[in-house]
Length: 256
Image 1: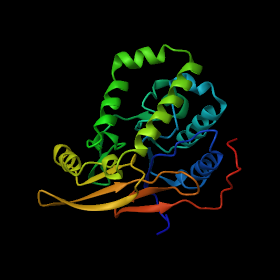
Image 2 (image 1 turned 30 degrees about the vertical axis):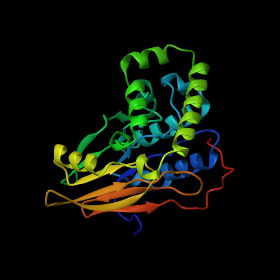
Image 3 (image 1 turned 60 degrees about the vertical axis):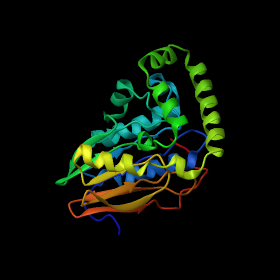
Image 4 (image 1 turned 90 degrees about the horizontal axis):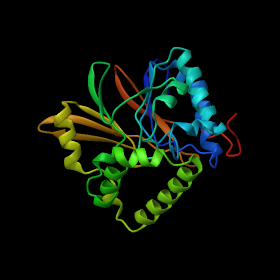
């Protein structure tokens, strides 16, 4: 169903990088054509392929994305950013430059009268013990301080090595191991007293209808923006609906 009225929009897993100009062009188009009509825009993690600290704003590509977001914020659209596993080092400098309010993972909101829990989603992939150990390590304040003290170029090199190691590790895992754990999801519904969860991370877009302790619940999984795919979730007082991106953006387009 096309977006014909104001709604709150959710997206995640864009993995923006200069090496993928088509995704950046799609995002620019989204910000110019869809987002200005939104009641609010929520970015639920992995906006960037990697974010190694707020001095990453020195890169023209990153600065351009922040400026485009800031322009939208200045037009009156509230912007919220819940960092993911690729950009968990996002901090106050990025928030100021992009006009974003940073959210904790998870965050509970009232969405048109419906209690809704927002998350990136990786914390619920509890069957992947190797990943959860890594996640705990890199979110340790000591690790964070030590990493951010390194020169920017060294941090980029380390991030690239970690991404390579991650891809190699995923190649040897069963797909279901890297998905969310059903009991972890059920416990999130219980603990936060919500009837809807919206998250990304798994790159498995879907609308799951669940029954938790006799309560009907909805779990929306957001799509990634790799290749010509991508999309977002639009929610209003009548409910939520998945929207696909237009496919006529050339892969050779560049962020300007």
